[in-house]
Image (cartoon, rainbow over all chains, first blue to last red; front, side, top):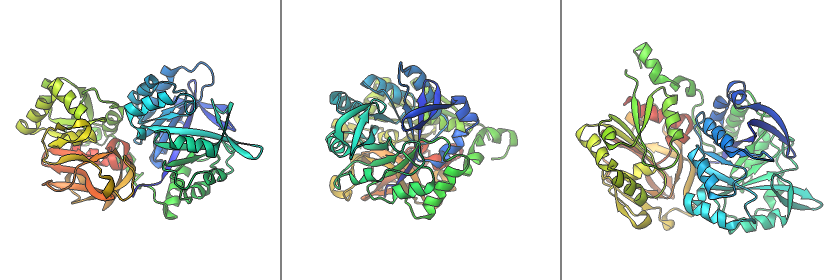
Amino acid sequence: MLKKRVIFTLLYDNGSFMLSRNFRLQKVGNLEWLKKNYNFSKLSFSIDELVLLDVTRTNKDHQKFLSHVRALSEVCFIPIAAGGGVRDIELAHRLINNGADKIVINSLVGKNMGTIDNIVAELGSQCVLASVDVKKVKNDYKVFTENGTVEQSYTVQEWLQKLAEVPVGEVYLNSIDRDGTGQGYQKELVEFIPDDFQLPIILSGGAGKYQHFINGLEDKKVDAVATAHLFNFIGNSLEDSRTALLNNGFNLAKWDVDICESIKDCFSVSENNQNE
Amino acid sequence: MKVPQVSLIDYGVGNLWSVVSAIKYLGAKVDLVSDPNKIASSSVLLLPGIGSFRKGMEDLKNTGIDKAIIHAVKDNNAKILGICLGMQLMGSYGTEDGGAEGLGLVPNKVERFDISEIDGNKIPHVGFNVVDFSERQGLFKDFTDSSDFYFTHSYRMLVEGISGRYATCIYGKEFLAAFQINNIYGTLFHPEKSQTNGLLLLRNFLQD
C-alpha cells in the first residue's frame, strides 16, 4: 500500500531562501546557510519529498535557480518537485536535467493547457504537480495565480473540477490565508475536493506543529502534508514529528535516520581503517 | 577494502545527478561513461534510466553500449545494477511503446500493470511502498523484514523465473521489486530516492 507523505517546501527568491507569510516574503539565508547552518541535508532525512519553488517576483534568473535545484538534489535522497515560472517545455526539461523528478505548475493551468499537454506527453503525468493557491474572498474560496496576485474567477471547487480534466499527476493545495501563520491547515479546503477526485492531494499552508500534520493526514482525501516554514520545525522537530506520526499509526514510509551518519563515506573511511 | 569505482552508464536518459550523489555520499567513486570500450572494461556498472523501454533499447543499441554491457557482465564477470528502466532493460522483452527485445540478462518479460489486477490502484505506481525480501543477504543485507522504497513506474516484471535473491512489492498483485542473480542486480525502485534504505542497498551492491 502506498504511503502518505510529509513534504518540505523551500521558497527561493533570487539566490535566497524565504519565509512567507500570506505570500509576503522575508529573506532568511542563502544556499550556504541552508547547507551549513540549517543542516538541510540532515533535515531532509525526515521528509518524504522536497518541493522547490522559485517565487522570485520579477526578472527570474532561471539558470541561477537551476543551479540551486542541482545543488540541493546532491544533498538529499528523495524525490524533488521544482517549479515556479514554468511556462514552456524547455524550462521543464532543464529542471529535470538539473535534478528535479517532477515539475510544479501553477499559473499555467487555465492559461496554456497546450503547454501542459506537451509537458505531460514528454515527461508523463506523474511528473507534473499542479499547485493551487487559495484565498477566502467574502464567502468564497477563490483561486489566485501569479504568486497569489491574480484572482481567478473560479472557486477552488471549480478549479479542482478543471484540474480533473488536465493530465497532471497530483495537486498541491495551498492556503494563502494560512501561509506562514502556523495556525494549522485550512481544512475547509479539503471539503471542496470532490469525493471521486482521482489525483493525490498535498495539503499546504499553516502547519506549525506536528498535530497539524495529524489533522491534515487523518483526512482520507489528503495524501500528503507540506510545510514551507523554515523555523516551525527546526532542530529535531521534523524528525520528532515524523516519529509521532508513525506512533499515531499513520502509514508513512520508514527508514533508519541514524544510519545516515554511519554509511556516509563508509567506503572512503574503510580505506584508512582497513576494516569495513 | 578498495574504494569502489563505479561506471554510471550515460546513454542520454534524464537525470543522473541523484545517482551520482548517492554513490559519492557512500564515499565511492563514480564516472559517467558512454564509451562502449570503457563500459566493456569496467568492473562495476550502473545502468539507470527513465522513459520508454523501446527508446531505451534503441539508445543502447545505436551506441553499441548493449554489446559492451553483455561483454562486461558475461565475459569479465563485472557486476551491474540496473535501476528502474535500467532493470527493465535487463529483461528479455519489453512491451512498452510498440515492444522491443531487452538485454536478456534475466529471462523475464516487462509488461504494463494490468488494470484488472491492481485492485483499483492507479497507474503509474508512484511513491514509497513496502518491499519484502526472499533473504536478507547480499543486496538485501542488514534490512528488516519489510522496507520502504520509492517507485515510479507503469511496467513491471513478475517474480517467476528469477533464480536468485529477490524482493517483491504488492500493488494489487505481487511484482518483482529487485533481484540479485550472481553478478546481476536490479531494482525497479529508485534507491537514490529512498533515503537511508536506498543508500544502504547501494552500499550492499558496492560491498557485495
